[in-house]
Amino acid sequence: MDVRNLAAVVGGRAAEIVGSSHGVPGTGAVVQALLSDLLVVQSQQARTLSRIEKDVQRLLDGPWRTAQLHLRESKLPGRSPAQVVKSLEAAAQQLRQGLALQSGDFAAAYVAFDLAVVLAALHDRQASTFYAKVAITSASDPFARRIEEMINRHFGLTNRPIRSKLRDLHDYFKPVGQHPDVREWYLLAVAVEPLCGQQVIADQVGRLTYGHVSACDYVRDHDPDLCDTPRPAWLPE
Image (cartoon, rainbow, N blue to C red; front, side, top):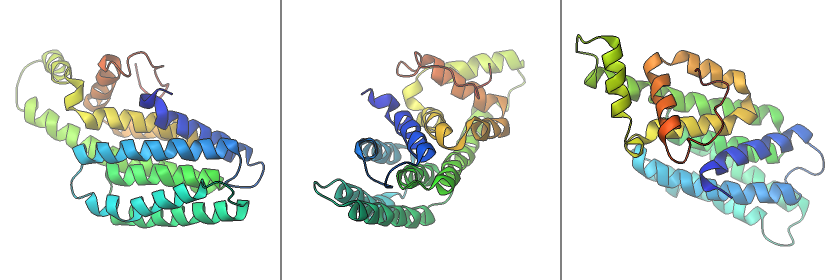
């Protein structure tokens, strides 16, 4: 499976599971595959956080790691449905504690996304949707703040025409690997959309300035890992 799209696949599968809600919560081959992919996504999230966030080691070494242990325990061979549900509920509780440790940032966003997926596996549609919304909201505030600071720092104090500023903005984002906030916000939005709906993402985009949307759009179009992916309906032309 293409790792770059794995979080989006996890979000889509979780939405399908919570939408169907058939069978015993937390059990079945589809759910077990979902949990396996979620564990891979969590490893990706941890690596990303080490690059874009500070002071996350307490989270990574505490509730998040404990939640991973419960998820791995749920996948042990021969577990009864009741044992699997118990492990998933314990993982969800640890993720709630981890979320309480974080303010609105990408760490909180990733924990909330993981929690939304686990709750989907437990067939808790309302809670899954709620935490998917928390995920994109938590990521949007720092994303908007950091991009705004960058725009003001590099382009806000000049008297050049707006077209010239936008050209400079595009040039600034050409080395897409140097701007992980933009890429990670976009990937998170794509991942949570199946769980919380297109309108929730569109509302978040509506809170951002043209500069933020332009940055996200430029990275999506020029990142070699993203340029061949479908353009989401919530990203304005």
